[in-house]
Image (cartoon, rainbow, N blue to C red; front, side):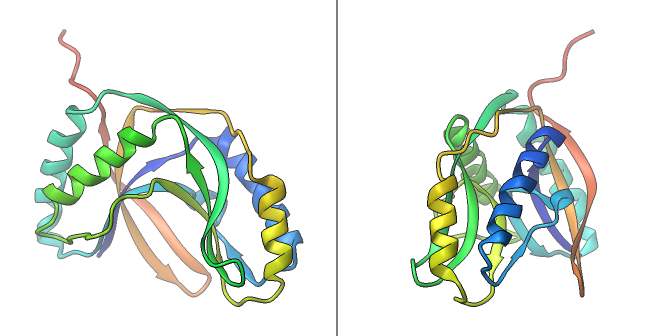
Length: 188
């Protein structure tokens, strides 16, 4: 099964992201936006994982999540990966909370390297769209620059999720497999 570890967003931020994605579509660029229900921040992509590894991954995530306190983050810039002539990925960058997410992603990469190792340094972001071809790239870049300094509000992060991704012809379908609360459990 195809798995990843993620932070979900709330409906308020999801709605604001949808408006940004509508503006990206209006640029006329050849892109595929992420379905609003699939918007998330990936902490660790695990790829294809055997089912008998899921309990080991869950145990690791349970311990890991307790080591991080809940925190706030802010999305504050619209950007892209790729070049001006052919931007490939359109994303929302994170200002407040960026260091925590980078630390979490780096640590998860170490702890789950036996499943999948990443050599790249984390670049905390949320993908909004993937560009298929360079058609109308200039218009897309102009739209991105016009919307660049966004402020979507604060997201309070209190849990991370192990998610399953099933690839279908009309795009991936994500299912929450397990949630892991951040911070130490309260004593009763």
